[in-house]
Image (cartoon, rainbow, N blue to C red; front, top):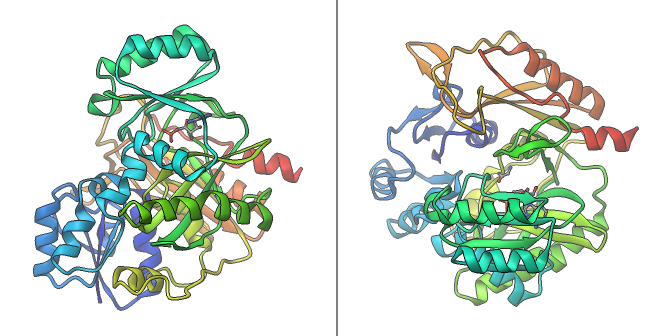
Length: 422
Ligand code: AMP
Ligand code: GLY
């Protein structure tokens, strides 16, 4: 079997790591492998954004399965193109990926399907946005409608801040993504990430997890792509998962199918667990990063089997995942300056690490055999242990032992869970 992973972040390294365990004798390929993926697969040398070239390569190379990691190539139609040339692919069509690539589309879909989410309005100019912000009051959330790598939402505490943020977006702070601005009611509660393998109206949820979006300890500072994660989340009961399935995931999948854009791939529900129950913050059309680096090490059943079955058009075929009775905590190491501008090419030193600790590479590269930084989020360090507290300490200690100039990481990943457990 020949398997191609499109994408080269921490999530894709985790997907490669898991699929290699599921299929030790398969041949693995990756588009532009990072420094951790490169020794495990063959690099293709084509960007996932180059949809036509990549699909052509996959067809010529007799690839049996393409797993698409990031949202951008999905939104650009990579899965559609692969299907057209007869290559099995795990990942939704561009039309279904609008659940993530257009917040306005997602919001309209949820409204139509009666899915609980924050009240919102979509604006296309600063004056209308300002009037709406003044009428709504604060706190309020201002978001670029298009893709913005997890950094396009700003929770604003004052009207002046909200108005200035919206005007910046219209002025191009997020490029095309900010031509439409969503102004949203601010929901209060704890966030939860729920991943579902979804095919049409059929779906199955994986273990729930929690991301840490802010750069600073204690959840302070600007939003990032995600500074750490853990799984499973202690407050999640079977009852809550049923509520999420029945009130959120099922109606959205039905609405997509009925609208002619059935979803096949990984549907990620980003939720706020409020006093009124779970409400949707956002949907993503792919695995979360860094939650995947926490969830996949706990997945004891095959990921390849359901992916292949879905990619080949046989649906989920009754595949239901099973998980180790353990906890996973993932600490992200980021470059100096992230989520703002950062330097690349900084040498990284990773000492020998204890068992139960796995380093997933994100923004790394091998330069003449030497490991250097090449992105904002550089590494994700996952520790698995039957005991949550031990997993948490091991992840933090391992992150602290890895060095590169200016590195930043949060030493408090999993703090809410630790507080809950006392
Ligand atoms: P998004 O870009 O939609 O993924 O939002 C990024 C982050 O902003 C979320 O993970 C939340 O922490 C926060 N956020 C977004 N929308 C809301 C909302 N309506 N209420 C409260 N927090 C939000
Ligand atoms: N961890 C958030 C995301 O993947 O969008």
